Picture 1 (cartoon, rainbow, N blue to C red):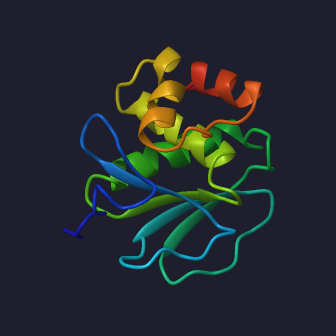
Picture 2: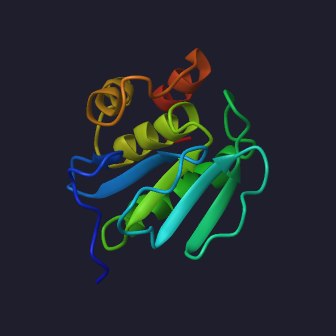
Length: 143
């Protein structure tokens, strides 16, 4: 079993099940310490190559995923892997798309849809989930 994130590390969200997922903005440097074993990148363009396993979802800035069923599948995979691996979810800034994805992970992990945005804002970042349509996406997730 791979060691997981340190729960007190910056950007690490503890889900109700105890699983840990790191959210991050790719425009900032990679944090010191452990690197992910799996990452889900939410960008409008293909991300650069990394030294760990990753999956890319086409998700333009301030918008929603281009392929919503693929997004749901990728988020389920990320949640499953977070049980035994260091999983990172990241977009450009680390708030809108990343916050939306983290809120969807919280829904999959048992947080009611109507409470997931508040959960992520309390436990990850106050600015998480930036647009009304991102909030609506979470409120209707899973698809």
